[in-house]
Length: 278
Image (cartoon, rainbow, N blue to C red; front, side):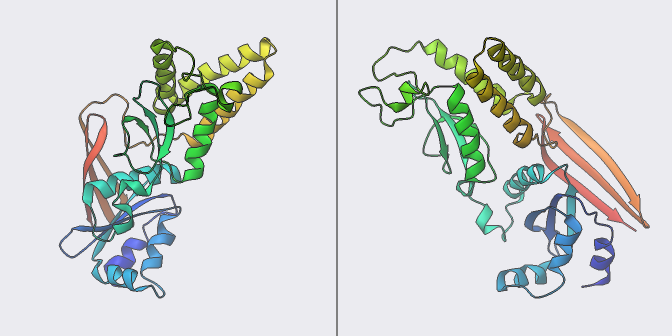
């Protein structure tokens, strides 16, 4: 480990975030995420590694890092950075099919499905999710409140989901398209909207059902509220106002000055310049 890398590592905080490894030409060759940035970055320059990591470390001439508010936010940012820089050592993360998404299809009778391949179906896309279990938990909660069909292709008679009120029964009943659009709008707001606002609305619905002694329905809303509070975290690198802006920031510590310029277009971080100098 050279002196420059060693000194720079001493400035890295024990916070969650993403890191970008660079070669001697300043090109990003690997992007990763970490629960504790200093521990993860230091691990590259100490101990033994497998062949792939050894090759990566041999090419590292510099690194950058971005602190996030949580591991979930780091995960989302990591995906965006990989798509932006296309690092050669991120082979396993270059394909969107690695991660699961929830899709509400554009079919005449829509379905909520989980997929790793966004090319196989058209619809409103939500995600990516860190793992299949997280996607399934979200979908299962939505299934209880929004009875889209589960069968594919469309069945010719009522199935179990109709009888447990998790399907409207388009196989035998005529469904008003406006009802589908109402459900679609609510799901989009739940999974992509202002989380605090949505939770407030869901809480009001939960209380309404409880006041009407419909405790099972109230419980379903309670579970969805708890799930949103636990897992639906916004990435701070995306602004909700969709404006263009350039954000300038600096930080000085232990004799080093870090200057960052973030280029935000349509509310999304698309580029970043960083300068670090003694």
